[in-house]
Image 1 (tube, helix red, strand yellow):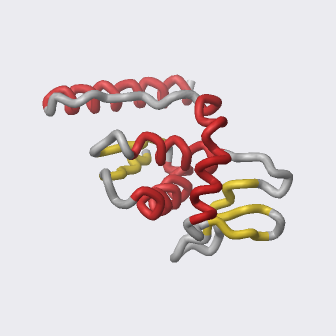
Image 2 (cartoon, helix red, strand yellow; image 1 turned 90 degrees about the horizontal axis):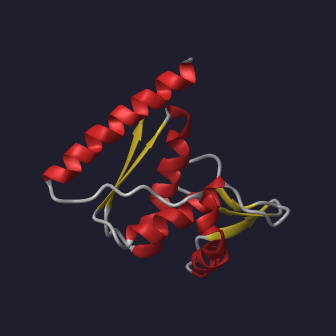
Length: 135
């Protein structure tokens, strides 16, 4: 029951966003599924490492962001990738094609996406507006 309410709430929010975007003759794009980004992860992580953003931390590879007590882990100790890896790659690949990117999530993801958004301008430069919308 609660999940159904959340889905309906998200549908209403997307409909409003689509209406707003159409007023400005822009399109509302929905990202690819997570597996789409998997082949790009190693290259993006390597580029971030080359730029000095990724550091070794307790056997994992992480990005330390000013103002946060915990790092953004992008490669786990076992060499596997996680949501941060996928989300970072998704944002970095799509940012260069957009003027404005809006992520709609629940509030439990706010810190995660705020950290991701702080890394991306370091990667490509500030080329688009990034906006987390958390409910």
